[in-house]
Length: 164
Picture 1 (cartoon, rainbow, N blue to C red):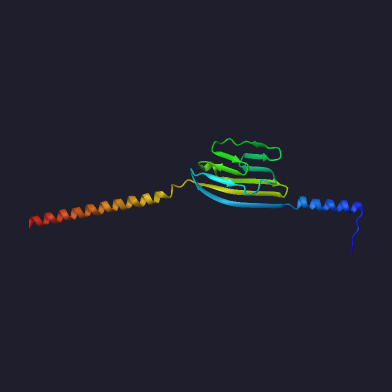
Picture 2: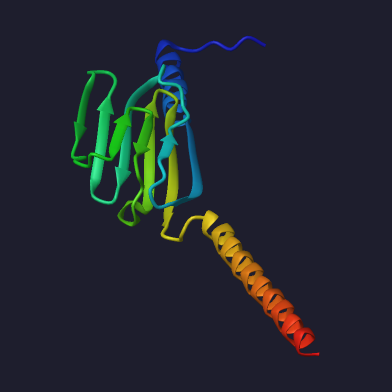
C-alpha cells in the first residue's frame, strides 16, 4: 500500500516530526549527597559531553555561573577565592561550613536538558586520627601507672625484707 501525501500534508508531517524531535529530547537529573571534613577540597563534575552543549549553568545559594558555548561568553557573580569554576567542573578549596548546601549544574543541548545536583555537608568533627591519639594517650598513661605500681611494690618488698 503506497500512501500519497499532498504538499501541505507532507509539510505538516515534517513539522510534527521536527517538533517531536525538539521536544522529545532527553532530560536527566542526578542527585548525590557528599560529606567532607572542614578544610578538604571538593570537586563537582558535570558529566556530559561539551560537544553538543549550548549553555552550562552552575547554581549555589545566591551565586550563579552561566557559560554560553555558542557565543563563548560567561556571566558569573562568584567572588570567593576558594571557588574555581571551569564550565564542566566546580572546585572548592578548603571547604568551610558556609560552603554546605545544594549545588547544581545544568547543561542545555540540542538533545535536551541534563542536570546534576549535590548536597554538600561540611563536617566540623575533629579528624579521624584524633581517636588514635586518644588511644595512645590512654595506653601511655596506663603503662606509666602500672610501672609506678610495680616500682612501688618492689621498693616496699625490699624495705620489708631489710627489716627482717
